[in-house]
Image (cartoon, rainbow, N blue to C red; front, side, top):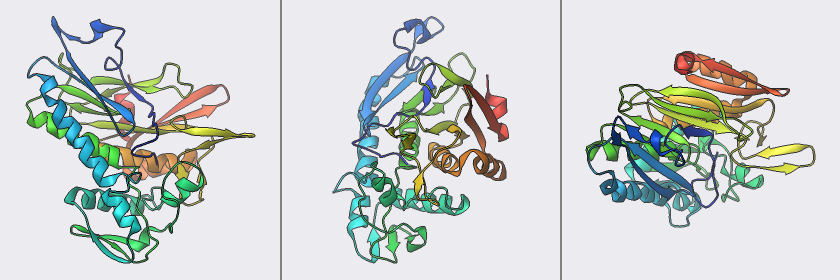
Length: 325
C-alpha cells in the first residue's frame, strides 16, 4: 500500500494526451484548444484535461482544498491527521470526520471481501520493510470497527493505514468538485489513478495507457468510459534492491512479506476511484494465480500484466477485455 504523502509514488497508468506536453496538438478538441490544469498533492502530481467551457483555472482552489483535506484526515505521515490521532489512541472509540469513517469502513469491508489480501492494518509491516511511518502496532483487522462517525479499537495497539484506498477517494472527490463547478468533459489524473468525467469532447471514451513494467512505453491501451475510474498497483512504483531480489512496497498481509513472482502490475476499472484503488492493491497482493481467480469471483474488470521470460502476457478479467484497444 503506497504512502499518501512524503514519499514519491509513481503509479503505472498514464493519461494519453494528458501527459504529452511535448505534443500540444493532442490537447485540442476540434478547432478549440483543450484546457489543462496541474498541481501537486500526496507527494505526486495531479492534472486535469478538460474540454473548452467554463474556466478550468477557477477550479484550482477547489481541487487543492480537496487534496489538503484528505491529507489532513487520512495521512499516516502527519502527526496531526485523524488517522495519526486514532493510531496513537488507546482502546476505545475515536470520533473522526464522516469521510474518514466512510473510507475506513470501505477499507475494512474490502479486507473481508478479499480474504485479507487488502488489509488496512498492514502499516507496521509496511514500515518494517522500509516504506511507511507506522512503526509499531498490531496487524489484525478484527480489532477495528466503524460505528457511525467513530472508529472503535478493541486493542490499544491496533492501527489503521488507508493509503491503499485514500488516493482513490481523493480522485472521486476531485471529480465531484469539477462536476459541481460545471465541468462536463474532463480526464483527471491523480498520481496515475484516473477518472473520466463525461466522454472525450469528440464523443468517444478517453484513452489511457498502462505503463510497461520497464517504464518504456505502454503495455496496453484502454478506453476509459464516462463516469469510470482506473487504478493500477505494480512493482515499479516503489521498490529497492537486495542481493538476488527486488523488494516491493506492496505487502502481502497474509505472508507478511513484499509481493513477488511474475505479476508486474494489476489495473482495475470501476465506478469509483476508491473501489478501483483498493481492489488493485488487493489483487496485486493476491498474486499471479489467486489474483485473477479473486477478480473473476468478484466480477471485476481487471488487467493483469505478467512477465514470462523476456515477454509480457496480458490477462484481462471481467469486462476489461472489451476496453482494450
